[in-house]
Length: 376
Ligand code: NAD
Image (tube, rainbow, N blue to C red):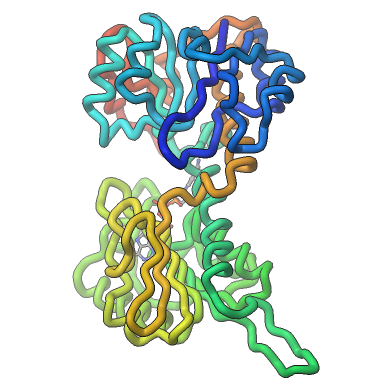
């Protein structure tokens, strides 16, 4: 089968869905690969490297005419029209938020695979682009904080005086939060973290950070292992703890999300007003409404008391080389799953709950949402 890797067209998108290394894996599965000229440029993968890996590099829209087209972000209307009826498209499609895109892909006769709908179960971990991208985002959040912060992270004893280590507080210790904790610890900061799922305490500690203890009872996570929205009394209790921790910290990194809900509001304007000048808040939930009341998506806001609130929504795209490599590896793992004979033939098995969960249009119909997946 021919696999097409078109260039990303969204402004500011720097990633690419395959790298020269992952092209090698696609070819080894018996497929051919066509890459749109310049597709990897912003991720530091020039055309020559793709050609050297065995892909054909074509200008224009050839990559859109392939049997399987893979992208990082969804196609726009004109790009949907380039897809051949019967083709397969794999990309992060936000199916819950883009019903119209799904309708137009179904109308076009395209089988669409939403890479951001991969079930969060152990068996599907190797395909999980959400984890790959939020892991990169957590790392980059600390880099952005370090850039905005006027001091070093690590404590130093120098001839010119002693510098205390930066104090970092991380709210939410899922994939992004744990990446942020690990990165801040490795830069020498003193890190504290909290999550409403108490089982992450051990993971936080194993990274060299302290877990902030708040007795919460057992009402904070659902049967699926994800966080629930907190009851009003619990919410009030954690907000008090957050206010205290934020005021003590130099850097606050917020990553809290509850599936299917807007991001919980956890850091108030009043709390930010009590933080020291030069402190930094990086709000990784900016795209989903923000954990901090002052966050503006895509921007850095400096408050009247000199606190910077960073609301970037493109953190993974700020590390395009590594992000593309991880994304491309997730894609190659998916293609391996869909090529059971390793013979260049794509076989979609809708009886497999993982493949069914990410198939959002098929045979002219929208097939989202899928039946629930068993948690394992
Ligand atoms: P997420 O992005 O949905 O949320 C981020 C974190 O915010 C979570 O840890 C959540 O508990 C926390 N949170 C929510 N409300 C909060 C609040 N008020 N205060 C503080 N923290 C709050 O989560 P995620 O990073 O995608 O991962 C969540 C769960 O899914 C974890 O159990 C993780 O291990 C699991 N997971 C499993 C797989 C897999 O098996 N394939 C992959 C990724 C994640």
